[in-house]
Amino acid sequence: MFESLTERLEKALSGFKDKGKLSPDDVKKGLREIRLALLEADVNYKVVKDFLARVEARALTSEVLESLTPFQQMVKIVYDELVNTLGGKAQGLNLTGKPSVILLAGLQGSGKTTTAAKLANYLRKKGHHPLLVSTDVYRPAAIEQLKILSTKINIPFEDAHPTEKPLAIAERAVKKAKELGRDVVIVDTAGRLHIDDALMDELTELRNALRPTEVLLVADAMMGQDAVNVAKTFHERVQLTGIILTKVEGDARGGAALSIKEVTGCPIKFLGVGEKIEALEVFHPERLASRILGMGDILTLIEKAQEAFDLKKAKELEKKLKKLQFDLEDLREQLRQIKKLGSVKDILSFLPGIGKKIESLPIDEKEIIKMEAILNSMTPQERRNPHIINASRKRRIAKGSGTTVQDVNKLLRSFEEMRAMMKHFKSPGKMQGLLRRFLGV
Image (cartoon, rainbow, N blue to C red; front, side, top):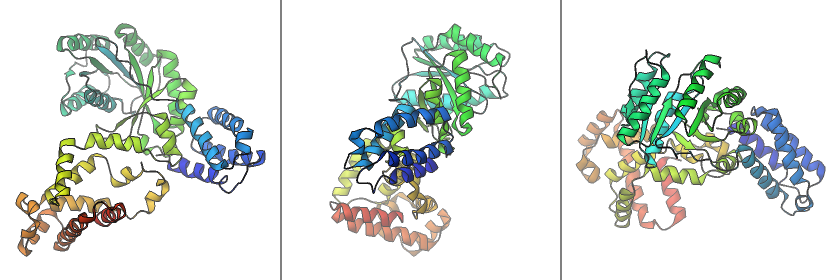
């Protein structure tokens, strides 16, 4: 996400690199480029105007103009003001109710129902005990859709009939949550293709009766400035407490994320970054600002890794590595855990300085899928003792994985090279070369 904006901002800021000192004209020229980059990213024009005014006021101080490191100073100023524009700091959920009620609102097609399940899954990981309910009695199969998702993630769901009133369904769900000892009720409401009085009246009724601790708008980031206008209207009518931006992974420009807080005064609390149930991130303004400026986001990558990797298995693997007992069974397990983080390109996008370079990296995701298929076609005995894999076994493995004997040979050869190089594990340069060779990067 934000690839185009990142590229434009990096280009605009690079103009300060060769300057020993800055003049006011240098600053204004750079700000013109930043202005164009933000407007092309579909950022609200008033937000752009206010942002540039703050940057210019700080950049024209003697501290910056006379600095021996003007480039670093300008990057820091732009970073600071991006963080301010995005909301300053992460805003947590208010879960003080008994139970706490989270009311989800939004237009039809914004991903509201899937987001309800994602949010429930996220809260459970944080030690909460959510219950899901849908009050969308208008859209065909809307209730059934959330019921299926709740079953998939094993979270209680309060069923309903399309002939029931939305408020009656929601109130019954809150009562059920108290009986079951659930501490959070997530209410998925009806959406429309456009904002109308019937939609707002129903939301107002639900808000007044349920007294939710959170009223969250689920907005499609792909809508750009339309998403900002929708958020503004919802906030004026039903007093939102936060926003969840969905489909962010497909939002190449990023105007909604950069505009919505300043225009509505309402904080973004989560980002929907994919279709999987786990693809929901807490919104950290400082981390997103870092990503936008091509500085990476190591903290988010670490958090993803902590969620994906089993600590007990990691310690067992560490012992095996020290004793050089790493086998194909361990390799298969590592590939499975890495897949939980996303694609290799997704993982690399969090690293500083990668940015647009990802497109030129020779990474073939199909090769990793092929590798896992080959490992899955082996027997446990073969994975633990690769030396027993003879010609006939290779033919069977290739046939079972839909690959060729050459592919099987390539994996086995790479694995043996990897084991040989593990003797030099303490050498960072050699270890990096080992990983690059094995993944084909």
